[in-house]
Length: 276
Image (cartoon, rainbow, N blue to C red; front, side, top):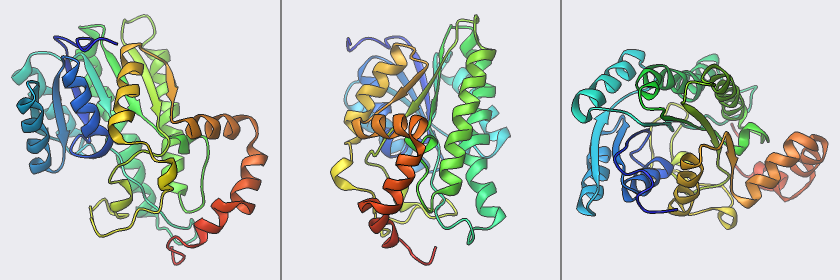
């Protein structure tokens, strides 16, 4: 893949202040895109934009809370006014609500779906009219959790399964328009997701209990994601363990159930926030 594969294009990434979104912003900028980074924390966005520009790239920070439909609409208007066009939209904003289903409130579930599903749908809704002008690319960032649910991840796994359905429907609705829909499902990737509480508040002191030996660096993840976006893949799963998990989750769910209730993962899960 050439370093100019997104030259002259404008790419909007939500949730771009950290983790996968931040790494993807750097990667697309390195490949020639003018990257619009959005999220709720302006200081983070400005830091990302400055770093991209220090490396010779182009970036514009725009605050946007995807849970606020008017804010999403305004963000797209700002992009068009300030940058002039929109070629790639990456609905990446999301977080993890964790806990036992019997302990979580209705508000916990609504908060999870408002961000991970409704927020992504609204991002797509307001981006699509601009993407239609360019034969652009719409990207939804899902998760292997859409295929394999783990204990204490009910809201998150459900939201990612729902997001996958949204992406499949959009692919049908946009068929023949020139706009492609790509649903990307990462496995374990370095990010702040484990340091955000159930109310969406970042807390750097929170431990990340995800298996470190399976974790991909965010930069490596960004490279394969950018390749999938450029190739207009309909659906793309990574890492290696993620591919195996997604396959087994679809074709051998009973085997997955046994592994998660009897294997090492079951023992590890009991050590993670047993009160939740």
